[in-house]
Structure formats: C-alpha cells, structure tokens
Length: 406
Image (cartoon, rainbow, N blue to C red):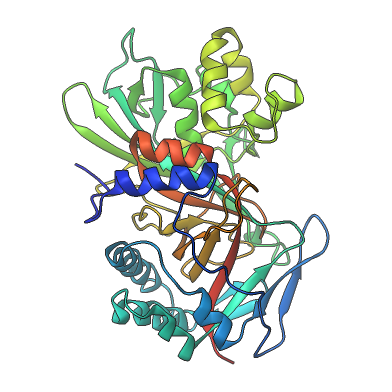
C-alpha cells in the first residue's frame, strides 16, 4: 500500500527543497519586515540552557505579510483533517500549553476548521480572527528533517535477513511518575520487573546481544544493520517483504533509555568533521567501517519497538503524518494539535535576497532528539528523495503560532 499519495508531484516538490538546503533556489520575493508587537504582552518560560523562550504577538499587518503558503491546498486540507481527528479525542475544555500560553482544545478546533473553510485560498484572512505569535528563543531555531525509509525485509530470519524489528515486549512496564509523586513533572519511564523490583529495561547493547531472542517478538527481519539502526532514529518504515507484501510499521514504545547522537560521538572522536554532519555522511562512514558498527551502535542505549499500522507513518498524536505539513516538537514546550506557521531559511549566507521556504504546519509528532523550544523536525515523506531532503536539513528558521485573540 502506497502510504503518502498526494495529488501533487511530491518528487518535484522535494527536489526543489534540496535546492533550498544548498543555497535557496526559490523564486525571489519580498522578505517580511521585522516583527511588530501587538495585542497582549508576551509570555515566557525558562529554558534548560538558560534564558527564556516566549511568544511575541504580532500586529495584523505583520500577520498578513507572513501568511503566504508555498505548498498545496490538498496537503493542508489533509493535515488539518487529521489534526481534527486528534483533537476530537481530547476533552474540549482541556487547556494545552505553548510556552506558558494556555489554549483550550475547542479553540484549537476552531482554528483548524477555519483553515479548512478557506480551502487554501486567502489564508491571510485568518489574521482577522486570530492572533499570530512569533516564537523567540535564546538559541536560534534549528529545523531538521525526518522521513520514512522503504526497506527490504523478511518475515523469517535467514542468513541474509538477520536484524530484527521487534514489537513491544510483554515485560516492558510504563511507570507514570505522578502516580508515586504528585508534585513530579508529567513523565512516563520504562522498565521491567526483576526479583520483585522495577529495574531499567534492556539497553540496545543487551538487546543486540540477544536479550529478546526467541520470545516471538519479531515483526520482521532486515538485511542491513545500518538501515536497521536508522529505522530507530526515523521511527517508521514501509517494509517490502520477500512475499511481495508491504508492511507499514510505526513507533510503538521505547526501552526508556536516553538517545545519544552518533553524529556527536563521531565528531567528538575526530572521525567526522565540519559544522554539520548529514545522514549520508553517517551512513557512508558506518558502511566504510563495518568493524566499528557494533561498538558505535551500543553507544546509543535507546531501542525503539514497533507496531504494524494500516496507514502511516503514525505520529505521537496517533494520526498519520502528512509530508511537509507534520512537524515533531518537544511536548514540554509545545502541546500537540496546534496550527503553526514555519519559515525555513537557506543554510547558505550567499544569497539572503531569496524568499525563505514557508507554510502552515501542524504539531503532530515528537522525537527523543527534538528537545527544547528551539528545535523542530519536519516530516518529509517516504523514499529516497525524502531521505535526501531530510538527511541534509539542518537549517535556521522561524516558528509562529496562530492562537485566539485575547
């Protein structure tokens, strides 16, 4: 089953994004002027790195100047409908947080429906009903990308297919800290029970050494250890099984251990150099040094478990992601279900006269590597072109939220 069939030419669109990553080869246009504060005073929250992140209200003129969407109405409609599906499962009066600014669910529903009513036309009319807020953080906003790989796989272990994709194990226990400490922040940790005590779950090294072997948890087996590792980073895949069946797998759970970046490890060891380390650079290094793979993989103790889904990939909102419209953010900074507006600048400083990439997006996913209000991940779709775009994206940008007027 082809998972992300949209009515526009995704390959051509993603190829144009590759140009943006390199030098910004998009049509020249007027760059918006500096934000103009308006409306209620800004609100802020402290960040772990020091300083404060806040939302700054923009006036109506600045709002209209920015709301120019460079993608298709079809993709916006699809993402909005999926967003409504997520919001419909929440209590209407529940208040969701955005850097200290709380909004009830029913108002997010109103905003999402307003986007659908406009059918992709005259989107700046949203400025008449809602307020646009710009996110300001102590650290510059860093925009990265992720994608869904398409991988060859087998239902059975063979000499060729030796690397398992596991479902959630029966002995994995989720513990909500608030059940034991009401004053604790909302956090769920994972572990297992051993000799009557809760202990950390098996690490990546322990699982790869066989801690889960023979228990029947395998959904499929992969042939490439490098792709098997990065499946855990991307969080979903479309598996092409040997019998011709296409199996969609998506994130189900983790072993609860922290994520550690291979890019950072290799840079610290002097193995890779440069201001940015792309996905292609990482894969090339690992394939050129197969003798180092096991030791490097073990440096990241986090392991991801998967589930088969009918349509996907499915984000942490439990709705399918929309390429170019769904983003992953830190839920401790921004709640899921909001409509945002994203501008991404070219990474090169050689031509700042060109218009930045810009569009409406929805907060529909999260990721262990996406931490803090200054980080977000854009989902780019499936396949090799999406991988090329996502793997190279480490760009500066600006994030805005469309929220109720006060």
